[in-house]
Length: 320
Image (tube, rainbow, N blue to C red; front, side, top):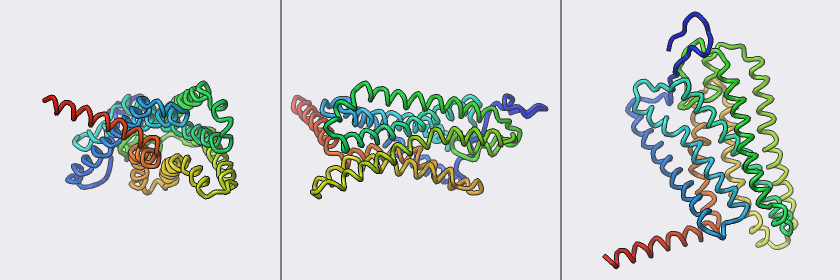
């Protein structure tokens, strides 16, 4: 990288992803952990999408949203994990300017889209529990497609604005990003720009992106809890809560990790990295497990697929 006389960001050709500040001999262990987690992400989310697409019984709005959730989890973890694993073996740990822009853009797109998708899933559970007789008519195929498409569009718009803002900053200091991927806060730390206007716009964007999704989720669950508590039988209450407990678990893990990261002071960058791990890798790994372990339909569909594979394997072995 060469900085010639001015502080303009366009003269930056690459950055260095510092990653985790641990002894070099621990890089192999971290690489193996990342590899194992990423393999589980691939297996879990591809498996979930396959189950949903191949089993006709799962052709419902809830599983349509869940399939898209698996797609988002798969792709935004793929934006982060492969580069992080390569850097465990790399001496330079560099990422090009264009690569950093691309990584931030794609990650922001998918993480915001996931927030809106989780809000759509909360609305779906609200209709299913509070207005079950109107569920089929209200949660039509057209509305489901519109909600999912809207999630991706909002993610794209937000990502374009956020990425544009970050990379109009001037990077006149160190090019070392104290993180394992390109994210807004570590990039802000190496910028020498005036942050007043930038932070005002960032706060406004965060408000119109995060607040609506949280409000939809909270209001939906307030109505759900109110409706469930009116059910007289304990079995009925248990069944109603079980239909949304998986979604609530996913929301809690994702938003908990995001808030923890962004509320962590800058003087504790290692804590921010650990929180980032939760929503970049741990959450995409756990989501398929949460939905499969607590969902009878998914477990039955999985048994059906595995049963067919075992029968096919037995028939091949018998022939040979």
